[in-house]
Image 1 (tube, rainbow, N blue to C red):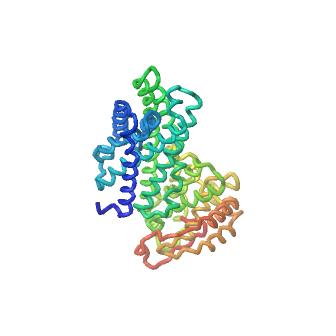
Image 2 (image 1 turned 120 degrees about the horizontal axis):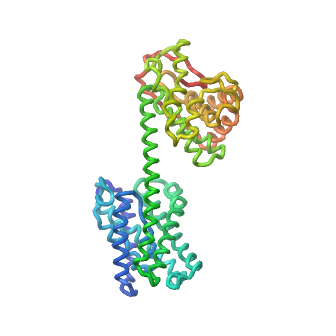
Image 3 (image 1 turned 180 degrees about the vertical axis):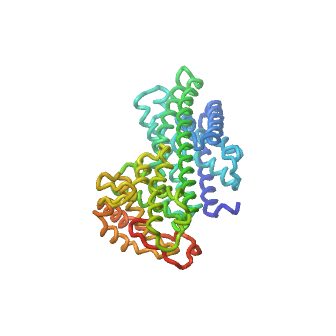
Length: 437
């Protein structure tokens, strides 16, 4: 109980009181109790299966209740699911019991009550009974919007109360992320409601859930695969950080800088994600370089430098079979190429260097210059930008440098220490401007 902040407990209590107020008119409305019981049992089963097997929440049954039942009755549909022990819905969740259960009951109850209220106010009930299409879509769409708005308000409020997030940030992005998936669930709920009211009855309505469950399973598989991809990348980056302690954290920041450049260039989200992978994994080939060279204090000999310059090829070979990386593999191979052809491993010139590699090269050099490490202090951002601009056209692509400069002006940059202070014995390794090893 002590783990829940007082403001969060107040937010939960307020939501519970509002939900109770929504239920007060229940005694004065005509409620089809058998339909309410069936929908509540169905929603409880769906919540148990979906949360335990796939994660997330399954809204079609809730929204079908909003389209079929009076608002106070619709608000009762999610309550039985809230009575399930937390371990059944989320195995391993042993947090404070009553705040979580009350919130799990009040949140969907308020959302479905609001959706039902809007739906009935716009004449949606008559449209569902008469199967009046396309008019039935209008009140259903308004109900889905009300459902999303209430969930957004509640979720943002609890984030602000429990985590201390500023209100503007607490609600940012919640509505836009939820609207599309909830709209799909709302369409399925509307189909359930229409079939329920048709001569075919509730059994036909249940058939709507079959394709929804299949699509939900596919969606869950996609997210599991994505999580596996992230775990693979984290494991590779951690291996590099352990081997080359001087650059700990460098890979993640190069990924962040690559994202800044890609977004400034107007790339779509999929390519931005690929550029993030490229930045994070650009030095994975260091796993094939002897540790004594990576941690050597003092200048490298020409032979040692040639060995280290093999790391892009090692990295490309390591990730060549990872299909989801896409063009990130080319960035790993070519991020040390230079526009004038003096780079490595192949001495490519100008536009022959892949675009993704030119982005990562700028991000890599920028973070190498601005990061404070145990063998030297980082340069100020302004000095690093000046160096990038000086080398633009010969070493770096001026377009990528310009994009980074604009992104830094908009978002700023916060360099951090990336190696243990004890990692150096006082000697200084050679600085490699714009070409971090």
